[in-house]
Image (cartoon, rainbow, N blue to C red; front, top):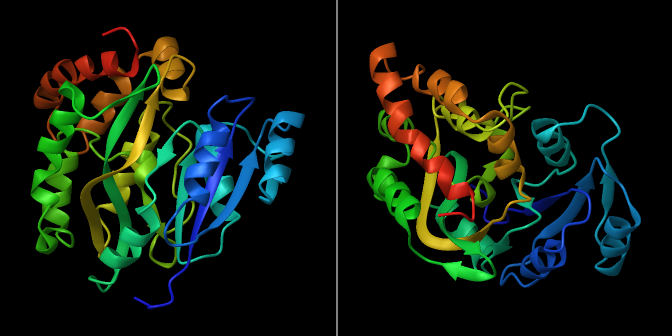
Length: 266
């Protein structure tokens, strides 16, 4: 990998999030500077004013709308070696970009970089709960550097659920085919992307340091999608990519308990 690698945070802004400015400040506070851009499919004065305040280029998605379409549009506006689709409600640790570059130098062909994370619930940082412990357990096989390039190991990890924190993912643009996300799922669009990328030759770089705080609140896209549609059918379809039907059905029953973790009601 080039020693002069570059990175972009592509913020997906939606409506009038009260957390957007906190997200931007965390991106501006990186120990290693990064480009920052913003895209939206819901242009309004609130978003325009914040973009102008922080000197961030704003791109308007006037095409097809939807979460995957918005993510792909934001991704397409960046031209750097690495791209992170920054979720507007989340907060990024100041060493995120620095750590990305340090760890990416250790592999020949990075595909994605991702980190452990904490949650923010009702304004408080939650460092450990049942869901976080389960995800860390599932990702344990990817801790050693030799495992990053193993298609077998990462597919076994993904076969047990979507344990990769989507907001923490940085994509190696030249090694990842676009579009990254398929317009198919409502709640498992990220899991589907990781499964597809897991088949490629290259490395899934896992940083066990929690460098992202992911906000859980009732207004989030994930919470809204689960309330509207649930996710059992999508979970079953994903598990069937790895398992026969009978095992997939059992895993769906176990996995469905994780839906409760996207609600403030524990």
